[in-house]
Image 1 (tube, rainbow, N blue to C red):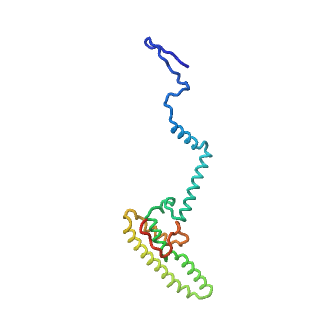
Image 2: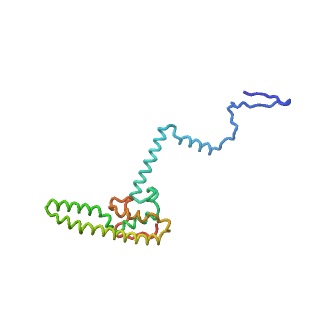
Image 3: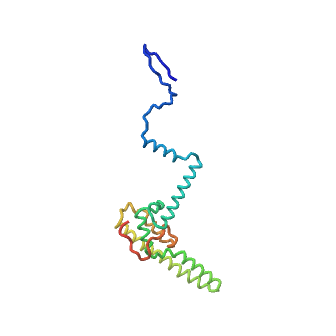
Length: 198
């Protein structure tokens, strides 16, 4: 609806705000297309939003599972990412670590103690407790000491000190796991040389 108003003897045209005509510049074709695509991408309901979020999570989990096998740094968990952690994993995986056999050793000792008790030879249990068990523990400690010392030397030669925080503990934990149980999966075989760059 149009209205006329008189102000100091002049007549001015007042535009009705309910007029369907726009009061702004016409958007370009590119802008209109972008707006249309944005509207199409926006979920129209909570159900659609939940579905898309679920699909996104499933896709990310799938990529992470594959990264665990291949070592793809882009999709690994945050604590596993970066060249320093990659180097530490390879450094541990290329060597045989006594610590990774600790649990199987302990299981064998317990089985031995059980057999000794059933067979009526308690002295066997005493021998195992006095000699075999301490020997295994000493072997683990010495091997881990060698691992840590050599790892620190390599890290110092390759990376900045602020980049290697927590790497030693990370390597010790990995070395205490059975090779087939390590995540991400080992990328090097026993005896392989460590790459020059990470």
